[in-house]
Image 1 (cartoon, rainbow, N blue to C red):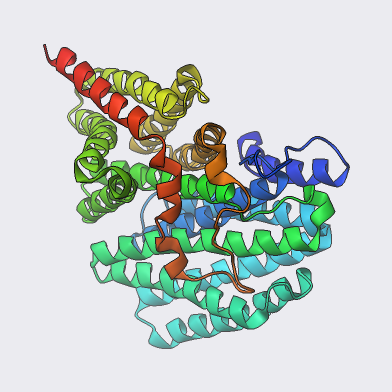
Image 2: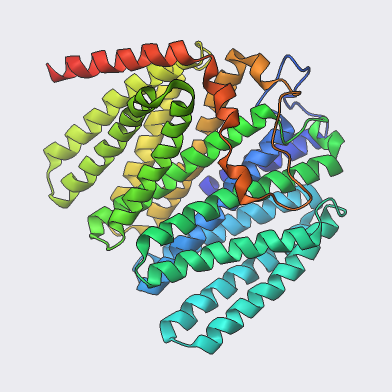
Length: 451
């Protein structure tokens, strides 16, 4: 594992080690001082990052395997790096032996998905069923492993049901892709990514309950933690799907339109949250702002295909303009708790990572393309932490620990839990005037650019 990959697992391991040794970790010191930056919420966020990234990378690797694409080995290597990061995370909680057991079982279930891909390519229905049978057995074994590890705080039966959902989503995404039902393939992919955040929610809650002293007696599931998780999910999903859509664009892939539709659906999820508070007009205004920067990435892809260096630079210049405007929006929306300069720096990293991933892919440097894609995916969790911390600091009363928060059951949660927009109403409610002002600023800026 190179140093970049090691940094992915570092936040989780550090949070656990520092809290276990009595070192510095942030904590919610009172109901009036909620925080997204606690050891328990860090655990939930880091598990959500790595588990959802697993789903994203597994689906991409399975598609690449079906196509026999040149970047297949690179996608598998990225998936293996994710497994190494997850195993290190488990080892940091339960020790090296448990970490190795996790790695062995986790790698095995990835192997069964590969068997299913190979059997599909060969048209071997018997081998496909054998792979599904192996996944079924894995489901039972891994559920028992987690039940034992968490001292029965997670119940094996509920875990098995959740793992079956994971299997169904990945197999469904792959089967739909092979059947050329690309829209459904991306629907399954988005469901798989979201589901793994629910897995992280249940697992982190169980671990924190099992080892409260190691997490400064903070909770993984709080209103502030829900906000950070929600933003992390949507922002990382944006980065992952954007990277794939850009690759599909330069290749003229048959699933290009479906990948851009999935990216638009991700945008709609953000925009509908705005609309649920401010109404359709404000929601559409936000949609326009967010869609705009996606359009500049599309411009860069098109310019690359046409080998138009001037158009490529124009796209980068437009992204630079957007970076400044959106950073001002975040600073205003958070009452100055997130400085525009810090936000701009993060947005520039986002641009560099997606452009870097695309350029590497277009040049045939597939390992680097997936390294950059992983960096882009992981970077968005830092952005989510930054933005959510600003919102919570500006609206502390909304995120007091006695506010409602979706609590996991002894399993890993249900898909229905992912659909609640109630938290978004709390998050955004008192920011209405800031948002309205920024929309006006944005319209003014655009008008002046057009002059």
